[in-house]
Length: 123
Length: 404
Image (cartoon, rainbow over all chains, first blue to last red):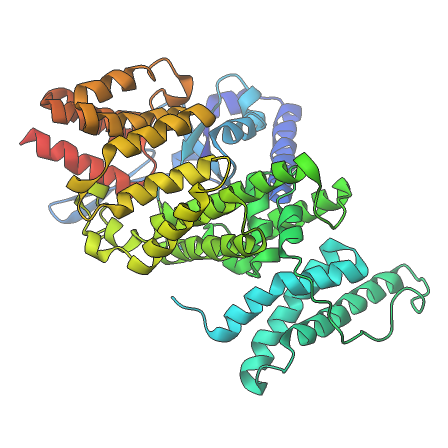
């Protein structure tokens, strides 16, 4: 079963972390990625640029309208994700709990099953 | 998609060649790699130069050379003497034992996760390449390669000997093997996403492997039962979806499109296996599939028999899914209200809470009792709960019929 494990970050929370804490989170992700690769469960992982760099696109009267910034003004934004292929939802939740963000107050991890997939998987 | 004859031959020989190599050299992990390389060499050479007179001997020879090269370079790395370690010449005689079953037991080792068991089985016994398995399971090749390599390391660490387990362990391990084959089949059958073509091939592959096990253990009722269940289910594949990929429920399927040959083979297997001593869950599920297959139209289905079979199945292998299916049969025999009553016994079951199958069956039965509004609501909830797009479309369309 494939799951998208998404990390919902709060820029204010991240900014308040000490350098040591930031390094620990980065190292934790590194170890998590290595573990997923060895177990044969990682499909891909990606981290996104800052939400302030986002563009919102809509088409009105056939004309694209582009505005700067995220779609919704919120405290939390999608920061990145892991796409995994694992045994079941319980395992996906177990994996999510190993992501360092899960232990930080104000950051959220969400687990959702994939319903449809297409396109190039090799990277 | 039918494979060319050379490919069929190679896939059939793959486990035999691997068995021979392991018997000669031990080292499952290295032998498995060597056989893959030999298979690859054959797919390149045989179409151009013709199939050798003794294809199995050819593969054993080539795989042995690869293995020896591999061991030599390993030894060279360790700067050790190589001459004594390996035989210089490879004997051309190939013992006439079929190790397919032994290999299956090894690949379905209980220390592995089901995902690893299925991947390793498809590669070592099915003769599929890592790339093919990765495509079938919709993951990158690197992911599948890691999974297979980890599975092989675990088997090595478990120190499993190359032979059939004895006594009750053998029985237990055979159940794991059958479960893995069942999982491979299901993966092919329930094409929830991606290329359905590759996934149909998995169902085909599961049938091929189960056929091999049945040939080795013709008197095992559960092996025969599983093979029959697969055949009877696979026989409906073309009637199961419309040209646009929409699901067609069993009672609306065009039964003339069922694969008659497969059904006949499945029915024969069920008949023969039901004559055996103890009945197992696969035999009972096959018997249920056979009851459906024997009905020329949905209206002629012997629901009393289906219900009775689910009752027995629930007794020997209690499971909320069995109760759920029995409720469908009961509704046909005694009316939808009786089916709904039986469903309500599942409400406290944690395993079924919010399960789309419970919601969709309840929706069907509510629709039959004329409770359109509640049926509509249950179809919608079921559509949200499923992870299959085809099923979601079907459930949405059922809900849509009630709204008008």
